[in-house]
Length: 176
Image (tube, rainbow, N blue to C red; front, top):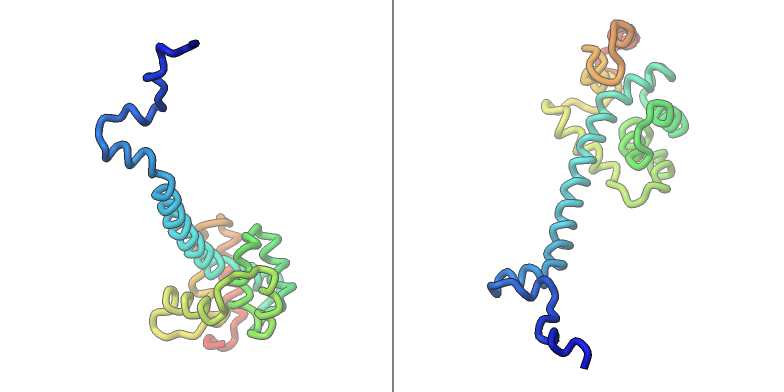
């Protein structure tokens, strides 16, 4: 007969809510919470990819040219060296492989990073976002979109700008 006087007051904190709608929201919130979490995670993932595309298009060509000179394609080892040295996220390396490596090198180099977008998807995304007039993606066109020509971003001061223009002068044919 212990605690028989409190038998009717044993309720959880949600059962004292006054309306049925509040009761439904509080007791069935978990599925809604998980659905909103999945939507938010997909949104954040797409935003993160957008930031990474920008970083790879606007910074990586400068660093690759700084260390390996002007080339039409780079080896995956060269790309890995630059991405590691300048603290690019390893998770998004397939973006760099798609931009800077040969298609057959992309397949082998990006294998450890599955799942990732296809090379065609990455190239189409970059073309539609950064190359409006049907320009092809080359090292020269990527360097024209570099953030270092105006000294904004990761490296500041006259050295980054001067180095940018000295690297741009290495292009013999402006369409290469």
